[in-house]
Length: 94
Image 1 (tube, rainbow, N blue to C red):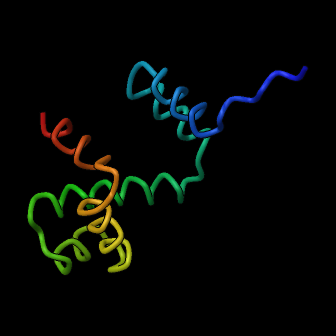
Image 2 (tube, rainbow, N blue to C red):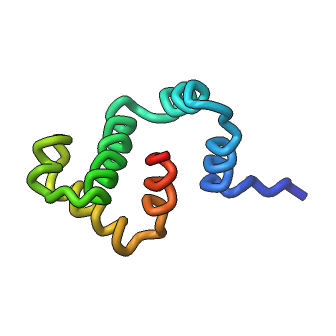
């Protein structure tokens, strides 16, 4: 009988959780993602921080260069998502 392959999402998340510091994380994500993917994820997190701080769309657009669609998508995730941003944002303030 063939051994079952682990769930791909779970494998990815376990790999991320195994990283010990920012440098290991940077190296892993640089290998895993394209430059554009990393920039997009970093931009979304910055947008989430600014929305959380009460900034308006126009100010966020000017400050980050994010499209209004990206800002709207991040805002929707903050309001109705899985609470991932809500988990991480307070931890980044510390």
